[in-house]
Image 1 (cartoon, helix red, strand yellow):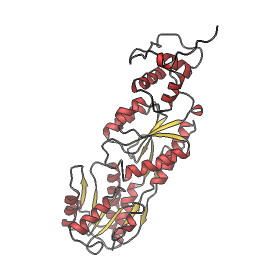
Image 2 (cartoon, one colour):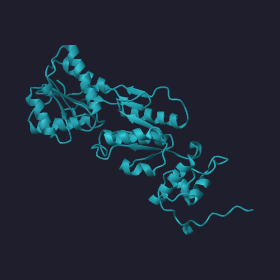
Image 3 (cartoon, helix red, strand yellow):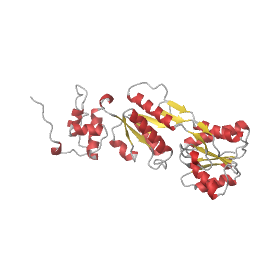
Image 4 (spheres, helix red, strand yellow):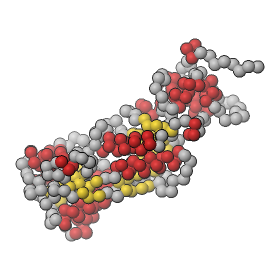
Length: 348
């Protein structure tokens, strides 16, 4: 008996969500399911299955959902060797730096790193809406609030998740981090070595990387016997005015400020000090910021910065993901990469 010819795609009667045949009660298949089995179960063509499994466009959302649910029913995940691997690079939808700054720069480095390894990249605008409709080998989490972290924790048992700059990791989680603790430590050391006694700090409230930097900052102060004035350590929230935060630190008597991060926070602080408050940097007050390649050096004055290894972090994360999806053993699940002080003219 000759094999049945697949029906024309346009003549199919799409099954509404929830009306897939119940495979759970049937006998176990004699051999591993194929994409042709998946196509028959989802009532679509093999080509449509291929487009769904490789996250291609031109597939209706309801069709994509039906194929993914059918794949789950058959416990089918094609071998990596016969399809493109796919990774989603995520930040929470409300994160301010998704378009420029830290998250955008790190996402760009990650995208290039994966492209060189022939691994496909998807960038869901809203992970909560888009992730269920994607067939993925894993996720790189660049930034993550509590809601997104809860979602990712539920996915860790089904796919590989690699976190960037996550410091409260468990033994089973994978994470690549910048040494933020040492960022704060060497920034404070640099100030203290130049005779500064009233060290200020400006960072984000309830943000673990900023808290790591502040912890390193405090350690350097304690080791040098320099008193830490808590009034000069300001942790902002989304509703905090940057001008009011800088003004508070200056009026508290700070002779220097560390403004970490690679999202232009230090340049904004420099602008406020110079053009709003009328102060001279570094004559009246010194500042250390986060390095923005090609930008920090053209400020007036050129900014002394702490350079975070974003490119190296991306390469390590991509290499780790490549190993995980190739079935190789990853020797170390957690890695912390070194930072570097770049001396310029904003510290007297």
